[in-house]
Amino acid sequence: MAAIFNLNHRATYLHWHFIDLSLSNILVIAAMVAVFAAAILIPFPSHRRTGERA
Amino acid sequence: MSNDISPLSESVQHPAGARASWTLALRRRAVAALPPEKLLADQQPSYVASWVYVFGVLSLSSLAVIILSGTILALKGPAWWHVTGVGHFFNSIHLWSVELFFFWMVVHLWGKYWMAAWRGGRKRVWVTGAITFLVAIPCALTGYVSQQNFDSQWISTQAKDAMNSVGIGAFFNLLNFGQMYSYHVLLLPAAVVALVVGHVLLVRRHGVVPPFRLAEEIASSGTAAQVGVDDGTAAQVGADAGNRGTEA
Image (cartoon, rainbow over all chains, first blue to last red; front, side, top):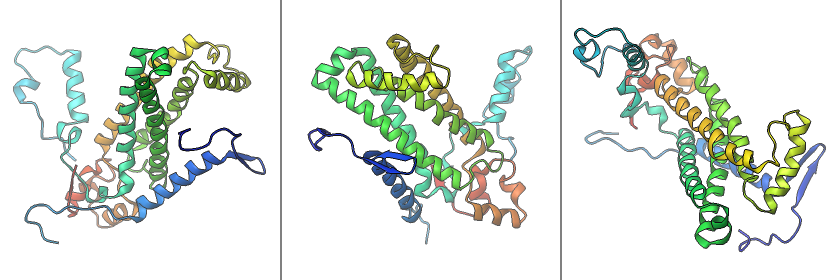
């Protein structure tokens, strides 16, 4: 990961009242929300059985 | 749903002259609770054909990679995983499979929470899943403090304060590498795997929870008893309610 991202600095933290989250954790949480939303919205590929009509 | 289809012949279940034994009683209970057609079902209800239902399997897949990579790391030791290229590779595989395990578990948890997956007699399914998530957290923590590097020293000294603040620091000592390593490679993984096995067996027994609307439609049509929504055997819902089943 260090080859891709420059990690030679202090982590970025976001503060909102008592909430104190690192930017990396926020990105992971956003990714989880995005995956969850996609799982609900994107239709699952279905396969028909042999000889079955739509 | 009746359990009249027995995988065992009558002569095997009740061998002539057989005395009552705990193995026989256990076998009867196990087969009655989880007959093979439920344990290794070849079809799932049609509503399972949704991406929301794949996160449990993704969590299981990540756990398998965690166990395999962790076994290799345990065999080779810290000098190998810190120094060699292959060691770095397996160390990274172990780390990222843990990250994905938690990622998929959280999304799986969200999905099951919003569909109230404890419905239809599935309370134990929900509870075992929730406890697995909770047990997996110290399992990961003990892994982070078992790395044998500056990162693990930093994490252990920081987390030690947290343990002391809740009064368990005396017998769960994050500065004790031997204890943490034992927890990480044996006690907690064994607990997680046992809970996951129980969770999956319960899912097989009770079937995958149906969506709200389908459950309501089945209940209003008066066929709930037949299709097993109320008695917790929704694995047959799709086929019995006229929906096309999906191959598992």
